[in-house]
Length: 527
Image 1 (cartoon, rainbow, N blue to C red):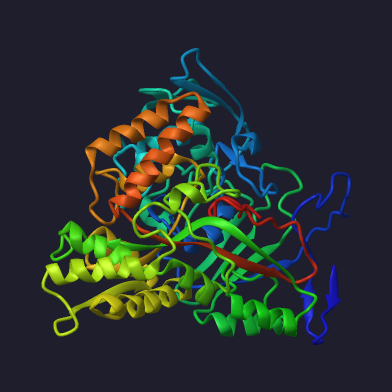
Image 2: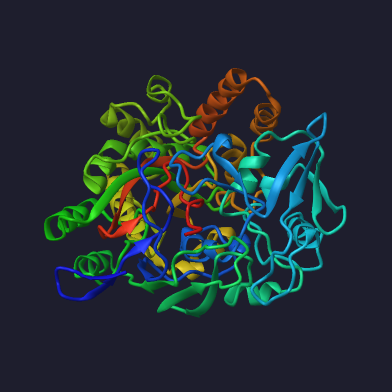
């Protein structure tokens, strides 16, 4: 269905789902149209299993399917919202050390080859480093630390065998970060021309320009997708992107990429636009390379943490809409986060900023730094507004304790590889969590051998607590251990959170059925 927008240009009416709003409120099903979205930067590759950024997940999640998936129209991800996808059903054995999935039949890969249980085995062999195909990086290896092996019983039954029970496994499998890959396609091809079973095929991926997905006419879910195509156009400047959205060039903003100032502009210039500000289980944080002097010194790391005025970040950069929290996403959107009264007594997180900075200056003086001898350094950060703005403010705040810092902006395609190689001294980063579960957050970001443990933090004693909470079946007891771990990670300055982001997404009024998920930025883009 086509209609004229107020500026006279043609727009495409889009329907992304069967229903919206209250139960029983049906929307007429319309097929066709191209969804136009601006993209914030160039994805490092199209291979979801090798990347750790929504720059890859958002445009390419629709190319794939999972075994199971979070309901795409429920904002709060939980085990209760998990739905079948390539797996029709699943069942555990008695001691919860094996889970068997019965698979859909008649599913084809985009190149026409049949999907079978062997592809599931190949995917998890790859993720557990048992495959001849080696991932260039494996950001979520820690998710499958308990996965011993995967077996197929014929073409349409597959079992994941665990070393120990892992209650979080279903949530890991339901994330947009866990697509099933084809056995017969090389990882090199998956990085640039991915083949999936999903509702969309990738037609083109022009680096630094655009990505185009087109309808999969042979999609195994009859009648889906509704859209003919999705066009992502890369626009690096957020203000330019907002202006283009207002002018009608785009139907949907890049999710959560509308800043507080640009939101005001959009509301003024396009009052009919539908804008929503939500949390998304993402925190802006300070990375400190513990392997590089002088940051191999605990007093130096503590001084950096004490220097930060987190409320100033929230008020200045997000117009007060973001929140301060610990290692896990704060409540109420986050299930596992520290209550405010526990967070406030952690060093560096209390309200008396000047007291904290006085202590920080004393630590710096002890290490030989002060007004006459500042510590000069570069703060690395990614070339995305969320990162750059926070890095500039971090540099300004660190001056209060005798640190003379400049900001070194790194292009997205290089950012994560630089972090993994620890080619930085300190950095301002944003960490999004694939699922709202301590297993994902703790093991992925803080386990000694995790590929995403960018700071070199390693504490075997705390890692034992990771295992303790993971195996605890009583939710209340598990929460108690999680809070203990959270406080200790903050006290260690393992990856100090600066603030937990809440940001905005806007859509033109004719876009229906898109849901912002409040506790993950990775799981809602099957479209």
